[in-house]
Image (cartoon, rainbow, N blue to C red; front, side, top):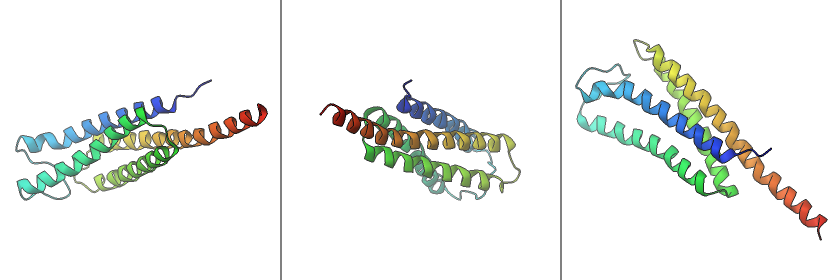
Length: 150
């Protein structure tokens, strides 16, 4: 049975991005319409909002790049870097859940979505780790095959 780690990783990143988009839209749409938003700190000017938007763009672009690179690269080095990225996102999602619990009033639909995204991230960690191990297993199998046919 062939396990397609790259396809699983791409599907999980896309799922994560769709959830992140939904989470972002729930929080940002009021800002775009000049309505008050429940947040832990208020933006005092358009520059504050602009900075947040750049950070959010970066947070969104890294998984997009991970999807592209995963589709085209299989090197051991890339797999390790990719695994580190998945762990970083899991830590960030856990911190996000914790911080969202301090926003008043607590928006439970947002917390539920973030918990789901955190779980998707943990699954992504697992599959990315298995993808790293696959490289080692393939190298060992190739060494055994080469020795047997020498």
